[in-house]
Image 1 (cartoon, rainbow, N blue to C red):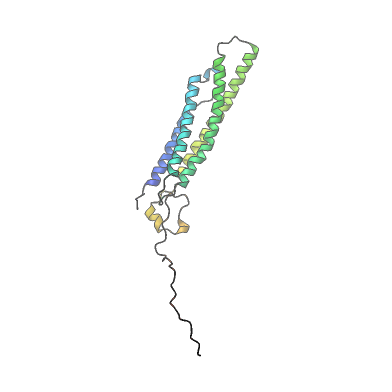
Image 2: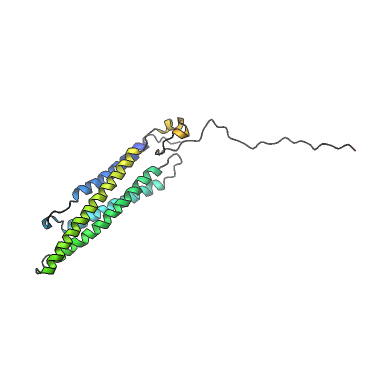
Length: 202
């Protein structure tokens, strides 16, 4: 039997660290108040690459725990935290890809001759970028809140203490499986003694 004491703290720490990475990206992404505040095409592409890398890390965290076959651990609460946070993270990607497309449009026609139609198109692109980046930031905040909230709720009671609790008192958000009851005797098939059939008088 392995000593898993402290494993819950490690899982909590990884959830918090992942949340911090998304929070850092949230801080880097601002909503422009004027066209001069817009990110250039390189910066926008780099931030999208960072976001997709973070989502890949979420799937890697899930895969690592889903393939852990230790019978004494139940990592379902941790897996659920990562998969739940992947939902708003996916929405953030959707909104940022539209942002990148609009930034690309503005970059493509940056030196084009001025015209009324082009001015209107640039204004429309700017408003789309503002809206989409607001959605991106909201989605990233949801990711951070989900990861931190699930980490806060993860139970850290050591496995030896959990083993002494009744099944009704076992926390549902524990990563430790409760061992089988040691005081319950195993039932074995009862072998019936051979009883000869009664003899009939002749």
